[in-house]
Each structure stands twice: as structure tokens, then as C-alpha cells.
Amino acid sequence: MSSRTLTGRNTITAQPLCVTVEDGRIRAIDPGPDNEALWLAPGLIDLQVNGYGGCDLNADALDPDVVLALARQMLSTGVTTFVPTLISAPEEKVIRALRAIASARQASAQVACAIPFVHVEGPHISPQDGARGAHPRDQIRPPSLDEFERWQAACGDLVGMVTLSPHWEHAADYIAALTAKGVRVAIGHTHAAPQQIHAAAAAGASLSTHLGNGIALMLPRHPNPIWAQLADERLTATFIADGHHLPADTLKSMLRAKGIERSILISDAVALAGMTPGIYDTPVGGRVQLSVDGRASVAGTDILAGAVRPLKDGVAWATIAGVCGLGDAIRMATEIPGRQVGRRGLLRLGEKADLLRFALDPQNKSLQIDTVLVDGVEVQ
Ligand SMILES: [Zn+2]
Image (cartoon, rainbow, N blue to C red; front, side):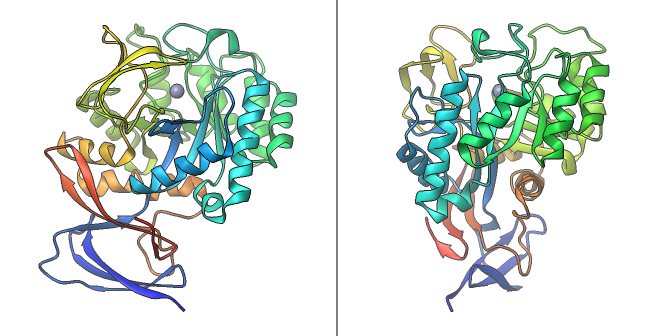
């Protein structure tokens, strides 16, 4: 029987705690030392990770070793559960990537636990400029249940989330079929009309992917797809909290509209995340400038070329920029996304002992990771 304790302040109540973990579970929560300076939270849960530290899930021929390396990178940023995300691509490429992720899960029980399922973002999204974001236009196609079945056959039913635009003619049927199989459907990269968005939610769509991004640069003031998704209480929204994709006022207002219980922070990190600032040549985005403040732009322009800050920086930025308090930021990066991946992200008796001890670092707008436990075992 392995047992250990970890102290830190509760991010919601600020009370100092001493947590005892045993056999992978939280067995006791007692008062901790008054002079405790570090914070204690569940391990972070990131529902949208395209890559990190040079590991690219959307590279042409994904190798299982890249997935294993990515899982280690995630742990170093305090993320104990993450959802690998594949963007619009030829079917053969999606299938190869799904197989690689399935192989990585077979090779490592720890990685199998860290990756609950895969998120396929696209290819049934809006082909319009702006709405499609960086997804290649020639890879966007209408929803196809046959293609979905081929994905699942290739990877042992590992696809657990699909992002689409409900403007397609048979979108509601496709959404109903996926949700009947227990697959989460998210609305994103869309130019759909409000009635199509509400019809998608009625058919079972339960999420909005990075609301406020992946949308036309110019919108009618109302109605538009943002208002419709903010208003629909059947939809829980994910938000890219990197300080560049959404201004603080916008995110703050969106969180008020959805409420913390229906809001999730994601990184949407791409392979350049975690790399040293500089100029990089990338296969999808072309020449990209990575700045010191964590912004990736198409070189020589202001156009964003993907998100490059880990989720821990999103938590820190939201807190420091006054979007919300630390307790709410942590809940939106642990407990609320935890509901999408079984039952995770709770600092409570009997729960999985995935824990994170950290200091808030206002100067670097980040969290300094002190300790990461997975199933009660120190991994960082
Ligand atoms: Zn996207």
C-alpha cells in the first residue's frame, strides 16, 4: 500500500490543506500548515491539444512515439488528462493518426489513462474563410456516418468528440447518431444560422468549441452564431484563454453569459507551444513568428497562427487579467472539463489522486509547477 501526503492551499477557499493519498485515491483531507504558500488543485484537464514542444499530432505521418512524448510534455505543464485533437485532413491521414494514438495507449497504461478519447475537430466544418480558421479548405466535407464508422474501426472506438458546423443539410441526423453512441458533439468553426445551432443542440450537441474563435472576422451585430451559442443552455463552451485569442473583457462577458458551470478553458496548443521565441517554418501555417509574450503570428502580420501557451498559463492569465478568480479559473480547467472525461478533476475524498501543487507567477503570467501526482504517484 503506497501512501503519501501533499500540502497546499485550496484554490477555492484559500484554506491550507494536507491531503493524504493512498492506492491512487484521495483518502483524507485535513487542515494544513498555516504558513503554506503553495496552491493545491486537481491535475489540469485539457480538452483540446494539437501538439506541444515540437510534438505535432497533425504532422503528415504521426508516430506513436510522438504521442508518448506529448503525454510527458503535458505532465510537465501540470496537465494530467488531455484530449488529442486532429484537424480537418484526408481520411487516410485522420485514420493513420487515430491508429498512432491507439498504439501509444496500448504501449503505456499511463498514457491510456491520460488520454480518455480523441477529439476530431472537422472535417465537417464551415468552408468559409474566417470560420474555417487554419483548417485547409480542400479537406472540408459534409458529415458522413460511413467515414465516422471507418475512424472508429481503425482505432477501437477511440473518437469521443467531434466538432462540426451544423450548417450542413443532414447535420442533425449525424449529431443524433453520434450522441446515441456516446460521442460528444461540439459546434465550432461555423457560420450556421441560430435555428441550425439550436437544432444541433436539440439533436444532442452539448459543447461549443473555442467559442469566439473559428468564426468570421466580420459578423452582423445580431443575430449571429456567438449569441445563439451563448444563449443555448444545452451547450457548454470551451474558451482559448491565452490572452491573445479572446480579449479579457470578451472572455469575462462570455463567462458571465454561460456561467462557470458551463465554461471550460482549453489551450488549443499547437506543436510550437513551449518552444523558444523565434521564427519557425511550419507545414500548415507557413512562416510563423513566436513572440516572448506567447503569441504565434503569421510572420510579419498580426494574424494568429495557433495557440502556443499551455493550459496553466491560461489559468494564470485569466486570474491576473481579472477575468475571474483563481478558484473559478482552476474549476474551468479541472472540475468542469472533468465531467466530459468520466469523473475527474475533483479534490474530494475518494477521488482519483491526480493533483497539482503550484505557485501563481504574475510576472511570467504562468503557474510555477511544484509537484504533479498521477494516481498518487509523483510524476513531476
Ligand atoms: Zn479550431
